[in-house]
Structure formats: structure tokens, C-alpha cells
Image (cartoon, rainbow, N blue to C red; front, side, top):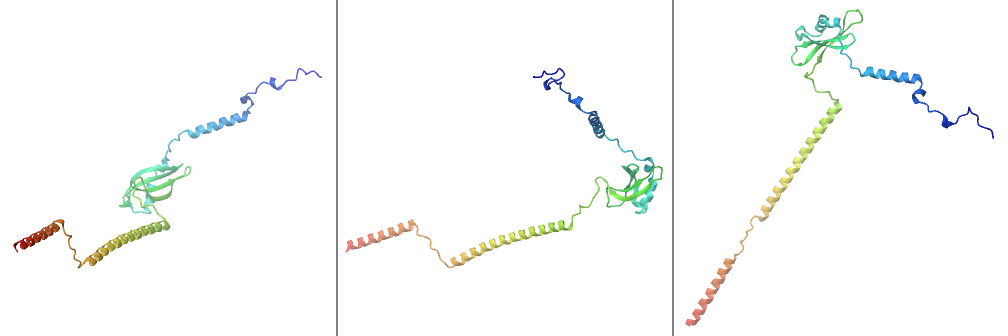
Length: 215
């Protein structure tokens, strides 16, 4: 039998391999990069800063409004809303009756060093504004109308049934009165009347006995 050589080793003599040492370097780097991205996403965003040139373009915004509404309906500036990078909406108070809480809104934008331009001008509701009811499709409104009509029909039928029952009860009472009409009911003789009759009979017998004695 051949002798085992010194350079040969068995599985049991092998040293355990550390998982961190066996992991490729590129995998570790990828995980580190992913953790950095997650940290950046969780960081709070800074509030948007309005563009100074757009914020100063009040006259341009008012001129755009005067093209769609009379001047007396446009009030004083009422704030601004940052819509995006170099996009800003300027708000003006609305003086028209019937629109409480609504604002004239003009959205402006500019590109690089260009002058501000008007994107749109409209009347928009603010917080607490009086709004019309939510629009419903005709099919939904028709279904609601039909449901109300069916409920009214069922209620009317229920009332008719109650009236019929009342009429039947009244007719039965009248029929009973007609049957009993003209019929005399004699009161039953009481025990006292029977006793009086017996006493009268006894008195008659006594008189008869005395009459025979005189003869």
C-alpha cells in the first residue's frame, strides 16, 4: 500500500473561510453605494425659493388678467405659489360677488436669462372657497331619481293598505250593527225576582187555606 505524502491534506484540516473575505470587492462597494442613496432620499427637502424676476413681474401678471376680466374685479396681490424651477403663480384677490375664497391666478415662467412670460391666467379656488357640488354622471343621477321614485311608490302602497284595513274594520262594524238592529234583548231574570215570585205563590196558598177553614 502506498504511503500518503506529506503535502496532501484532508478536508478536516482545511481552515474555515471568512464570509467577508470570500465576498468580492465589487459587491461590497455596490451595497455601500445603495446605502448612500437611501440616506440622500430620506434627507428633508429644502423649501422651494421663488424666482426673484418672476416674483417681481406683478404688472405683467395684472395685464394678463385685464385681458380676461374687468379691472374692478382684480384686487391686490395675495401671495405666490412655486410651481417648479423658474415657474411661479402670482395670486390676486378677487372682488367679484359670489366667489368668496377665490383668487385670480397667473402662472409665469422664464428660461435662463429670458424675460418672464405668461403661461395661463384663471380664477382658482383657495382654502375654504365656496364650491359647486361634485359633478355626477347622468347615469348615477338617474339611478338616484329612480330609487327615490320607487321609495315613494312603496310608501304610497303601504298607506293604501293601511286605509283598506281601516275601511274593512269600519264596514264590519256597520254590518254587525245592521244585523243587530231591531233585535230586543231581554235582561236575564235575577235571583231576587225569582224569590219574589215564590213568596207570592206562598201567599196565594195561604189565602186558599184560610178560605177553606171558614167554610
